[in-house]
Amino acid sequence: MVLEKHPKAEALIFDLDGTLSDSLPVHIATWHQVCAHYNCKFNEKIIDELTGMPTIRFAERIIEENGLRGVDPHEMVKMKQETFWKHASLLKPHQAVVDFMKSFHGKIPLAVGTGASRRSAEVQLKTLGLTHYFDAIVTADDVSHHKPEPETFLRCAEMVGVKAENCQVLEDGVLGMEAAKTAGMYLIDVRPITYENFSIAD
Image (cartoon, rainbow, N blue to C red; front, side, top):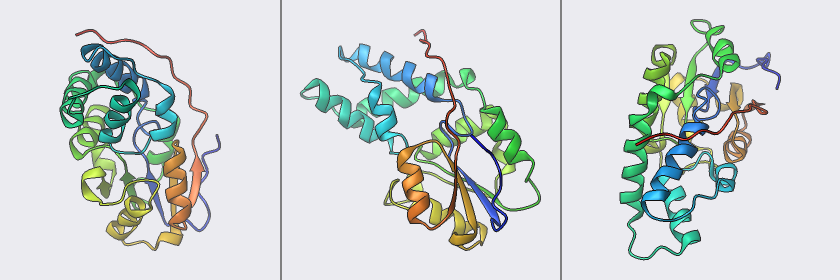
């Protein structure tokens, strides 16, 4: 992982989960807890596949893989989000990415482009003390076409007043990287960022 601004980049756009926020352990632990409630299993492999997509896509996949009948994915999402917010204090920053972001604060526009809901994004940024660093925040609630479509990042560019081809995206998710490339933006792959799984109590 090399964090270096492209010489032609006039704005930086950051993914949130797994990029700025070391949130994946909390998300995974939360999904395991929700699945225990529904007496089903959470396949952690879908994290890599669906990272960047709205939470409802995860719920629909879990319901499909486990053959759950009569389960409302929206209710599952509600439980998942409320459990995640409850344990937001466990969140930690990916310090290298955060330090990189802070080094450009006040010098060029900074934005967040995330597949998380507005509430989840705000909870994470507030918990990590990062909200005030960003000129724009675009969430799953603000776009019609989510990653891997480029709308999230294009909206960020529009909000900070910088042409897409002069923006640089920092991402850890495959879908987000595809979105950045489709948008014609410079890209930093922040992987590999490692984390340890843990569980959360009720």
